[in-house]
Image 1 (cartoon, rainbow, N blue to C red):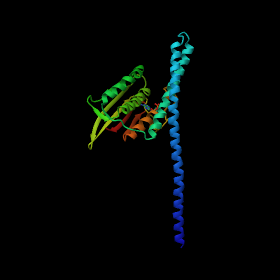
Image 2: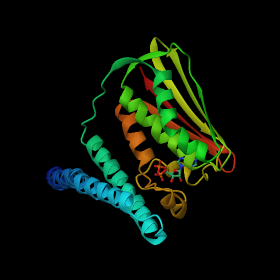
Image 3: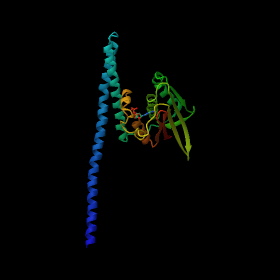
Image 4: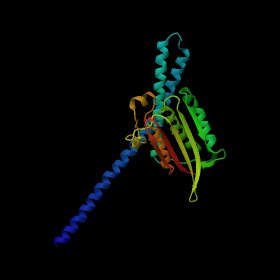
Length: 260
Ligand code: ADP
């Protein structure tokens, strides 16, 4: 009888704790979903007023008297801040959307070299301003069946970082290649810089949201620590991998591998 009672008690305790756990989990999931929706809605709603403010600042800049450096400096400062907030809201919106499993790959056949060339053309002025070279290595005829917009986004995040975190005069190498392993085809994208590198203790955290190795410096560069989190979300959703190898003072290599 004692054994039977103990067994009954055990089964009841198990059932009760399972019930409690389920009760606790559902509100957490709901609260998380509400928070995600709030972030998505808030960042979406902020976009229109921000673009109105930006246009107004640009109108004032056109109208400003060149002989008044104070007004011009204030307007420039305002424009930089509005641009930083605009970028932050669009990054938050993007993260909130990818959290909601709204991820869909829009596949089409395209040449990866041409896609990389257009990203490089867009980022070249920022590199040239620092006396840096952007070098691309990709087979001319390499065509993949993937999402050109998402590959462009990955390239922008990684090349933009490579430029930001490299001192004047450095180089950025972008290398694209395909590989067939056990009948499956992969595209690898390497972005290599000879910049400041990442400290060993910071390496596991660079893909975390809002993580910045050097807060003062990155704030000045307009970064919010969301670029690599977005890149990782995107690559994870596409069942690919993203990795980093880095040595402080020597440089960093980010490698993306996706199935194409
Ligand atoms: P941020 O907007 O700050 O650039 P990211 O998520 O793109 O945000 O990067 C997170 C942090 O990782 C950066 O603040 C920087 O400290 C580090 N990092 C990213 N890319 C590089 C790189 N190529 N070289 C050195 N550090 C990097």
